[in-house]
Image (cartoon, rainbow, N blue to C red; front, side, top):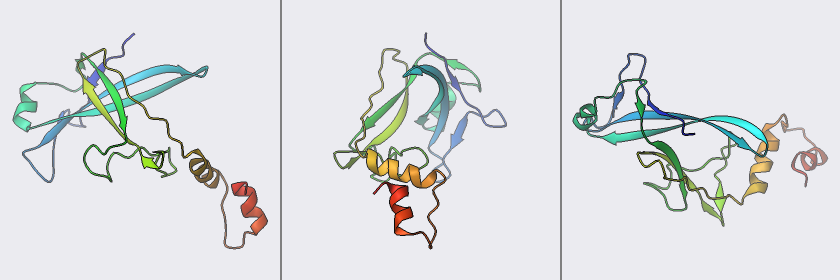
Length: 158
């Protein structure tokens, strides 16, 4: 079963967003809501992607908010930056920690494609200890200036 990809509009129903830095450039946002079962748990997630181009070409598609498109959204992860080294980094949840493989940052981007056979490409991160430490710090583990060494060792399981 393929979940539909639909065009996203703003509060006025406009589907084309113009760049604030360059009015010769714009994009259309598309979204796909997915249901999955991972390790026995049902999950719902929403993927979005942008279709970039010159505004006149984007207008020629004559798309409307909520319109269903054929195709799908795929996730592509790679070790090489898509554009610059500080963009599209794969971040571990709300930790702010960049996911890495063999010490290299992982870059993650979503793309809309009309190829329904296209597959997402994922890279498994291996900096799990760094991410777990950050998660523990966030999960109700506030370290104050008066924390003892023993308390810090408990928080970080040192």
